[in-house]
Length: 334
Image (cartoon, rainbow, N blue to C red; front, top):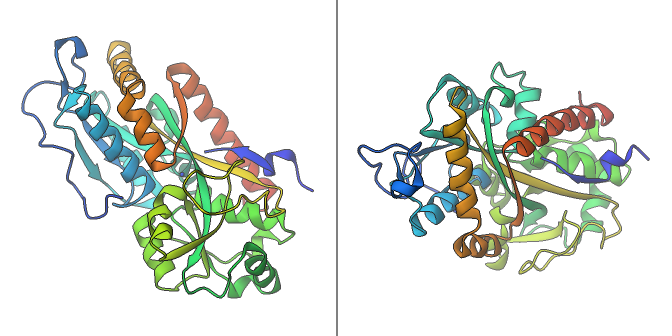
């Protein structure tokens, strides 16, 4: 057995077709750094560093809608900038030094991608605002898959790993990549033999699952729960410690696999903004988090509240970066 970090982890991961559209028209005048006491914040833009339909995309749009519904902000523009596991978007954010009107939705996937892609821009260059949610990953197959149970899938996977490709919407080091690697390790399969196929966002991954291009997928539960309820895909297991409410699937531990794993998502701002501007963002997100509308959004999307702000979130990001590097090394993938 490998170290405990490979067993129980909380690490740091649907609005398809919404590229470069927001939850409202970008307001003229005003500033996202303006005080909420003067009325709703205006002029705020949220960068999603991967494709429409992804977990980041869904989260960002729910955040924007909630802020607008509770009249904390108006005219928030949510836009997508894909590439390199989120590091293209990360570079764009870092290049916007001093821009207090730009935030980026991010999570474990960006942590991993910035490490594995050797990105020039890193999360250390950004201004941490808040961790928002945790989410279980799902082990999912097409509805017509020959694998009716997790045991059947694992048996075939261990017999010929190359013939059982697994897809995820993460670059190496992201949640959808770490999930099958940790699962392989937990069931006695060498992670270096796993045939992992990376897709740029949940929309592309879902198409690959539905098109039988891969044997199974590893992805955030929120990205496939609707399709599972409709009978288009089948969730064989979830990676959380407890079953996910509203999802008819056992946990990995229920199936005898000693692994618990959750993804997380949060928000960072551009570098070079003032302490006052940083605090205004933190206050804005905190007010949203405390609203009944956000609590309902958590329930609707199957998200777990994991709220953390400011210096505590900054410390968490540093720990996550080190943890991802350690895990990849222990799995022989780095």
